[in-house]
Image (tube, rainbow, N blue to C red; front, side, top):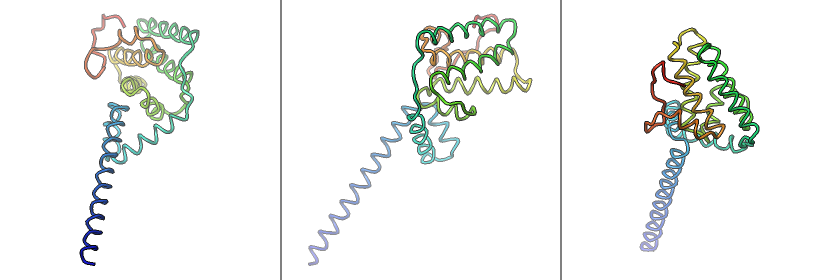
Length: 202
């Protein structure tokens, strides 16, 4: 009996050990998948929540939310319309940088809505966007932060120019305009636009 009990105990320990290893493996794979999908948004969410577990739970909830949306590409006429509207906004920047920046922010929201993202406050829009566009979501956050400072009278013309570059990167991806995206890219490993001289063309 003692040997049978010992055998059962060993088997139970082995099973528990296998379950623990499997759970650790699944947790690691979950973390790797979320890091790969959300990129810089993953670490930002960890910092925001103060917990890797809470961050991953939040990101998985966000995935499920966005999966319920009917995200769709723009049809050619709509893409042409939005691209022309962006060019007009960009041209306006020379004479009216404040007005152009406000219009760029509005145009980004409009194209997101046309793609199937719901109208929401900025933080929810950025979070929704991060599921399928994690890198350009950084541009959206950076551009919006400058727009907020602009509304408070604390943004210089150069700040506004940088915001326009951030918005252009986001707009190009949402409109599926690769040439525009490449022209807006800085070339660094994080995809952030470079600082440019005031005389350089947007």
